[in-house]
Amino acid sequence: IGDDEGSVLLLMTSLPGKPLGSALNDFSELQLQRLTKQLRGFFGSIRDVLPTSNMVCGIGGRGCASYIMSLDTFGPFESVAAFNDWMALRAQSRYGLERAASLPKRIDAAETRFAHGDLTPFNILVDEDGNVTGVIDWEAAGWMPRHW
Image 1 (spheres, rainbow, N blue to C red):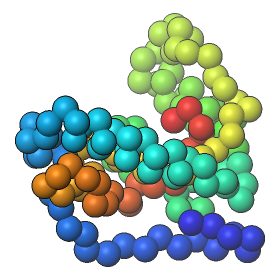
Image 2: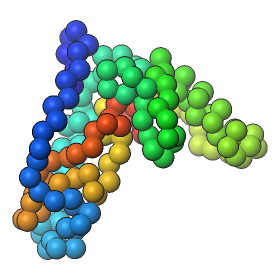
Image 3: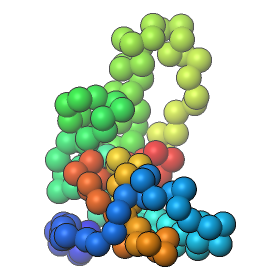
Image 4: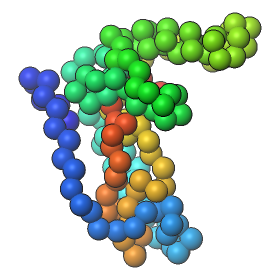
């Protein structure tokens, strides 16, 4: 995902399995526990990838993608504080100043971490035994505040 020169590589390939969202009810309690452990390990390792800067951005420094936040890309932002400024303005225009002021406290000093950006049960592939075979749809991946 990154190196000393700031290069970015995201490998995409065809993967076996079916979406977890359509297979979840097929698994035993033991299979679900194993699946949970696999996912915890996988996403823990993704979150441990250290950024080359504190920018909030998509892969390669492009704008961020979040279908919950906007249908268009937004940013990139030079810092978490700049991202929070954008979020605050967005909240004020959407909810009004009074309601926006009641939102949770900003964490401007947060570190950025690599995040999938669109994680749903339909973007996690599993085999018939409940083992994770892969995670798909990484187009919204990027560097987001650690709490994202």
